[in-house]
Length: 334
Image 1 (cartoon, rainbow, N blue to C red):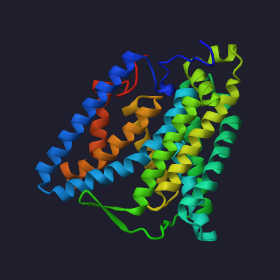
Image 2: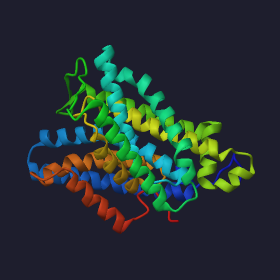
Image 3: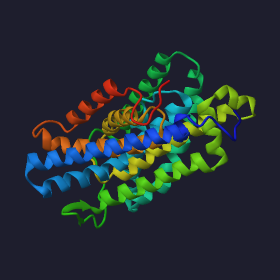
Image 4: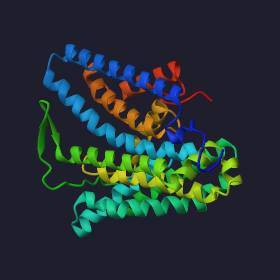
């Protein structure tokens, strides 16, 4: 293997041979069929096309943001082999960066991307080089405890600096737009659109740049990457920084949609882990598809199980995937 031709079945590459693509297409078709059946059953149960359309549109829109959060998480796992429990805490930092940008300077919430993404990139690079680099090659429980402790530290620092009172961010002109009989707010549409653009840029970075080639090479075989001259320590740092920047971008995008508290990121953390497992650990494309599926599941689950938490249906799907296909929909067997 060389840096210019990493193993094609590496999860981060999200590409493979013809057999992989045939399997991926087949699984995608099956997932689409199941999604259509789920929508049909939801319509049969609710008896209202408007209610079902609203659930589908809302689920797809929020699912795009879930996918962006999960792409950063799965990228970090695919390259550094670290399960990052601090991912949601980084998202919360971006939420408060947005609060400060809109409150103090009166800028448009989504213009905070220009500040939050670079800040989170630098923060991620500093955390990886200053803290996590010492855990590489150590037992898995060491890494888990470090990232869990880091999450608790960030949450409590946010609580100390900003206090426990909930905050909110208002998007100017956040009116409703009719889509297929459903109503979607401008904030959800913008969040979905920007999330897809950022996801596409990340995919192009991985597939069409020298840095992306190096990242995929390290993900496939870090020892082989070192032998061909790739600085793996630099790639580890940049990969963690990119993953953290994805969490930061997602935090800015959801800021008009959520109540902002120091622990808000933990909910996205839980969902991101479910999405990563659903799409396949380390698979970037699978994370995006998994995010859309979880968004739909969350919204349709509220129709199937009224009065219950929407996350109940998400965890049911999560458990089924663990039993039926533990490597995820787009993952490969070890």
